[in-house]
Amino acid sequence: MINNPIPNITSIPNLIQTILEGALKIGMPVVALAVIYCGFLFVFARGNPEKLTKAREALLYTLIGAAILLGSWAIAKMISATVTGLGS
Image 1 (cartoon, rainbow, N blue to C red):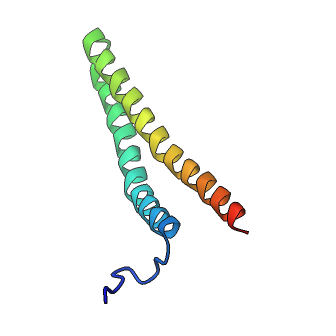
Image 2 (image 1 turned 90 degrees about the horizontal axis):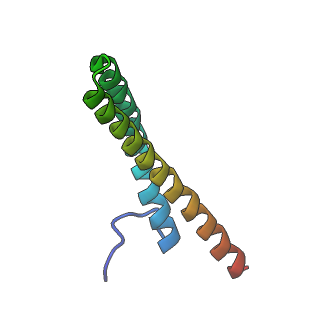
């Protein structure tokens, strides 16, 4: 008999929800630190066009990553609600 190593997980949607919650708990502080780092890049650029471009790109990629992180959570919630609604 194979025992479940995560006792609170009883179904695939619960597993996906747990994984996404963990990713959000780790990812959001990383996003906050990345935005702060981008702010330092803007300050240290001091009008240098090359450094300003690098800072803008870093901020853009940080915001895209945050959108993907939050979007995955929203999509998972919608899919979970749909599957739950179809089951009842």
